[in-house]
Length: 513
Image 1 (spheres, rainbow, N blue to C red):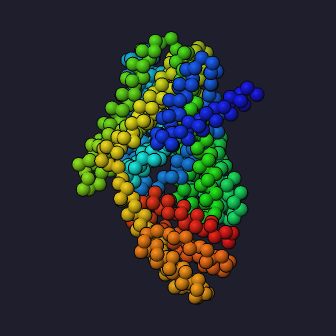
Image 2 (cartoon, rainbow, N blue to C red; image 1 turned 90 degrees about the horizontal axis):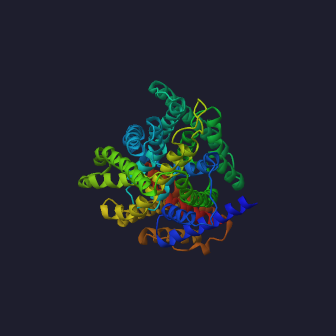
Image 3 (tube, rainbow, N blue to C red; image 1 turned 135 degrees about the vertical axis):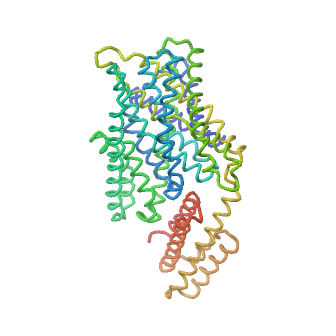
């Protein structure tokens, strides 16, 4: 009963802090972690322990799925080369550099120092998505950060497994074995994810029940993860691939009413899970620090050295790619783009879950050397990146000059609104069953949107069932035009999603079809 009360109290506190972060316009992950550390330092607060299996099986799948669904196929195709470079090359370079520095400043055995490097080598998709959700980043930069954080996990997971096997056996690492494991884990996970996405797409196209659709959507990431782990391939990769595929097909899988319901339900689930998991990261750090004999000042120096190494290596890899991300005529901002992308590489839930899953014993039956220090350093680096980088990332983006301007975003929305209204007018011309009075109201509404770039509330004249059907047909025409504009590259994925949500709300306001 006490554990249930603790969980409920944690949910309440995390929710209050997350809501406060929104009101204060601060990044919720950063404020939650800082609040967790502050609460964890209080003498009367019991120590919170995390089961890595709970994090991996219960928390990660829906958060990864939500992050993958937000990834734009079109934008990802534009940045797949730099994403590939960062997801493979940067992970390997970061693991090696952190391993060398950790061995030098912490006294860890070389094998365990490389384990630490493998744990911290990749950015965390949950943290990156949560921090970047409200940032005015250009589409390419936003997609690069999301894509890198989603696809670099397979690389770091293979490195982690190989490094742990080497540390437990007390032997050298086998790079041939690592390459084979990577193909098996990443390739197998991608295949499982694609298969799950195909099955779910077939089921959802034949389903009209909102409750059943919601249940299927909630179960999909868990099915992908469990199916992949059952055959010993990457569950993380399976969830990411399934989410990216289904996210690209979302407009064709459901109707507007169901999309609105899924948006609300998944938004609630993600909000609660993110709030709790970031608060728990902060809460656990004081306990981890107490487990090691290192003095706080020495530990702080070690954490800063490791985090600084990660940042420096990241900048050296990102800088050559920044010119590609900074489109003409703004190539002079390439170095500022490199700074922003480098500073946005936060660590979070996945590294902590990996560190906590370290075995207690070596193959010889002795204790794994430096296990507690590796866990403590991982947690401390995560807290440092989520707070120091998290609180300063938004001001850095705005002062760097690379932020997407409000005028550009508004221009995209006006373009899409005008084009979709014209598409609805064209569809109205094709219909021959609309009473003249209703047609006049509809034409006035649509032309008003074209002239004024807004949607007046003229739905009071559309109470009749047949007229609601006509209005719904026009909204469907607008949705098709919105998809066409997005496919043609005239509007961004973010604009498409915002306007699709507005059209779905208009459709829902018309009542049941």
